Image (cartoon, rainbow, N blue to C red; front, side, top):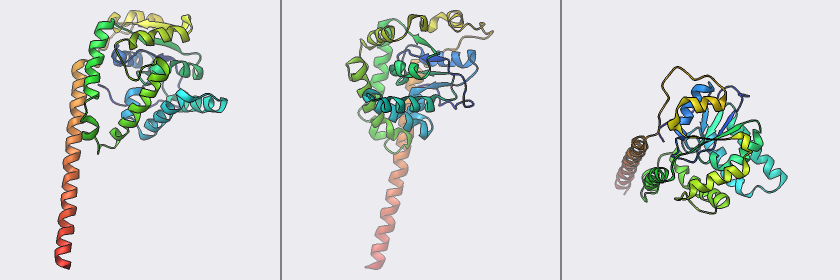
Length: 265
């Protein structure tokens, strides 16, 4: 939340970073920082899979469905192709669901490094639980029912639950998910390729990881709690307006049908 979808750069753009931090660890800030430092678009998988171009939304649904059950050689190759297709033209990826699929993305981009944003457990859970309370409201799927892109949210949520069960043995993000996720990264990513980073540290540690000069500009800060709440309110407002429009259409149809029946009979 807090950013819009990004368009890919030219085909063949060098993919350099797997942003493997769990949601609410500063991923949106790292997204903006990498866009500056690597001079190219970053693929925020949360935003692209729920609000990006239709082909990317479909691709991510296919990836999320296939990843937990890709056992055969042909299934793994199909998964590789889907990942390479959706990430072509980007310099990095960010946030969930991509962060939970770090080993699969590493298989496609073996030269990329893995940067995992992190933060203190208590602060992370407080922020994550707040986001869960927004996204888990019972009325959200109903309110956004007529919004074209948000109609995939129910499918997305179910497939993300399957990934969570497969990868961390829990159906949804819980208080110990950050610990489990970071332990998993240490198990599957070679130590020389894995970097943990706190966005509160600013430019210098990140530039050192990437071996690039420190830019002469303020370090970005993005995706505050307020931004998440505002995005949620925007979706609710758009959903309410869509319902008003559909009710107006239904009322007009009923009015025309009623008049037609009265004239005919």
